Amino acid sequence: MEWIQVADSSDCPHVGDMKRLRIQGKKYLLAHGDSGYFIVDEMCSHEDSSLYLGCVQGDRIKCSLHGSRFQLQTGEALDEPADEPLGTYPLKMEGTAIFMQC
Image (cartoon, rainbow, N blue to C red; front, side, top):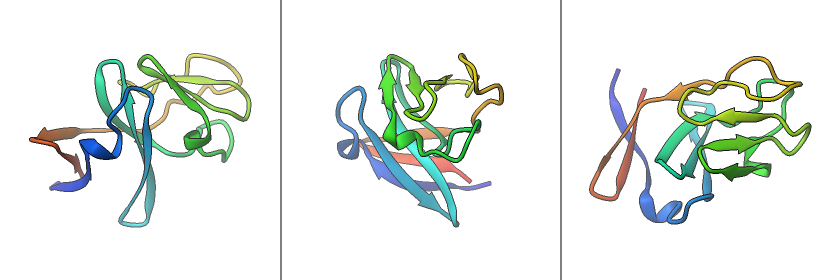
């Protein structure tokens, strides 16, 4: 596993901001929640819908298709119809640079 730079904090400066990431052919989402930055799978675990079309609420992200919410720290599905968690990925910051472990 290695750390690769995927974004800068200026890409998502405000709580609620999101940025789509494509790394090694896979789609991820960088989300700025109340507790900081998180990287999760971009696609909802219930159906193929981009969470980028939803919204960040606190440390949760809401899918715009069916309203399921997920915990950004753990990926846990909090509302039906989603019952599978999102993938979550380690990140670290060095200054304003955001790195993801791949």
